[in-house]
Image (cartoon, rainbow, N blue to C red):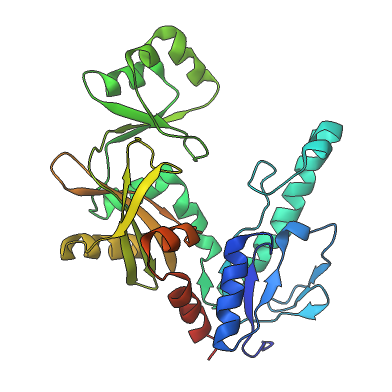
Amino acid sequence: MASSGNLIVIVGSLKDDHVRAVQSGIQAIGHDPVIFDAMKFPEELPISISQKSDSISIDGKEMGRPSAVYVRSLYQDPSGYGVDVEEEMKENWRRTMMAFRESSTLLSSILLRWDQLGVPMFNPPKAQMNITKPYQIALLQEAGLPVPETLWSNDPVAVKAFCKDQERIYKPVSGGAATQIVSPEDLTDERLESLAGAPVTFQEILPGDDVRVFIIEGDITCSLRIESDEIDFRQNEKKIEPIDLPDKVKEQCIKAMSVVGLRFTGMDIKADRHGEYKILELNPSAMFLGFEKLGGVEICRPFCEAIARHAS
């Protein structure tokens, strides 16, 4: 097996503030991480791999088996943040989609190889399936962890039954739009016909505190309460402050991270009417710079230290 010494790889683009922050943080510790800019592949980034698991060349550099890898994004979704292929899609959407499929297959294979070789990954590609929200919530439920009552459906009959005489919210299955409260107008036959276009997530309303919990390799780095006047706090934060969660909730959060198979996460939990926290989701590539600034906490430094420990 080829050795790559103390090589640390960051998968993501230098256009991303978080990638630059982690790069600087790791450099401050005394390592010089390699930036694997997946956004440049295939037009500007030559990659070659052979049948040998550790035969991986990126931009002319033999990568072998790195000491640690931080996966920010592979940018292999044409609708994803930072990806601009509008003109290519207009010209030939089928060819563009096929190119994304081919590129994604190769890039994913590299991460899967490193995972198979035992490289510590933040986070491993095998955990990506566990991030799929309907599957993730079921995993947590089966593990005996508290999760909200949820329905994912495109069936108007099932949705009406789930929302009957209950306060519910709705949101996309995979994210990307703000959470809304289900109104009587949303349950009309005409409105529910839109479910034929795509399924929607319906969920019980949790009116208590919004909390973001950052966990690095099984240790809670910080817990932050987010004050907001909106049902969806994203971009509507009034105040973010550190809080100390009850021991039982801390144990639940750490267990959830283990169930999903992550080394680093920003986990969203929210209290119900009785003050009991329920787990909404675990993010495999959580943004943290804004939470650091507004909450007055350190996340990037301990995260970089955790990555660098594997290269020491």
